[in-house]
Image 1: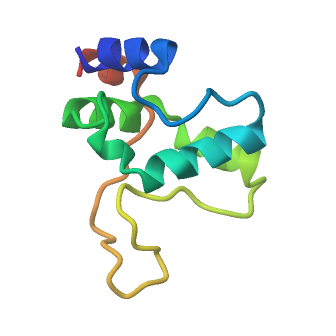
Image 2 (image 1 turned 30 degrees about the horizontal axis):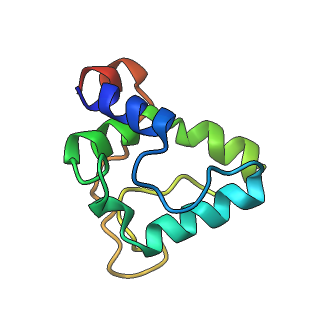
Length: 104
């Protein structure tokens, strides 16, 4: 259900700020604008199942490898960096699992 909702929202660009991005720089600006406007409050991202499906649908290891070129590490699903004393080390990292994302 969540995967289908997400697919429909992405294809239709439903309820998102501005025009769809045409290059990486525009895409990053678009993400920042969506985040600032509370993208988690905009359908379909107001649905926790959609957000959970996204967490499993993103290959974080591959992103870190390609984008950071070995100079970074995979983050987790909370805003506190690993060097901060309040970082929750005990939280398990969600591994890329497209099949699981599709079933949510």
